[in-house]
Image (tube, rainbow over the protein chains, first blue to last red):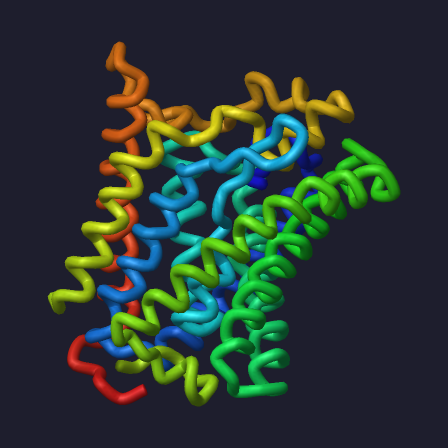
Length: 216
Length: 98
């Protein structure tokens, strides 16, 4: 759901850029507090993996494709602050190097995917994990949080398109949510599979146990 | 760097090099909505900057699968190195407490 240049009007891209930058600034200061230099390569690998996975579009219903967004994956494994930074790095490289997502829409794309996507995941994942500590709930929480992260990010994009007078909200919102309901299932399946695999091979971020930032 | 980091990078490179050439060419969710509601064309020619590797294809290569795979490898390495360098600037060296 990378918004290209031209979709958003000036007031919308300027205000989403300002909002995205403010939220990101806060994430950077939180990350600086909780991150130590041994953890830097973990964030690098997460960003590299999300970049790679985003290239692999999978077909969904009705002649449409989707790809992993990765906000949920990064949030579950790294915590929301680091995840925002990881996602933003991927979005900046996609925009500057690969012409995926416009430069004027970068703030909106960061806001939707790197900020809103990560915080929806955090909220949903922690709420569900709070209900039960069973292994089964691990998988359910991963899947539901991933699906929701895609849906809410898609909803935010619909709001930005409506503010830009591209498509009215009562048409754009159901359209975006309708197609992303299917893409979100792919997101949920991939995220759950990767998280469970990563935990199985012995990477146990402390964040997963205590709700803190990663620390092996 | 620990074994897990090398392993993670290797997986990312394999996904980018071997799976991305088989990615679905169908429009994604936002493109589909823009197409169905006829506003996709307003993005045409609106790019503010021109990127060195547009559309995940290394320019000048005839073989599209190879161009995609190489673009993926470049992207994975750029992303890893880019974020690592950025964080090295942000996080103080030798900081071990959380």
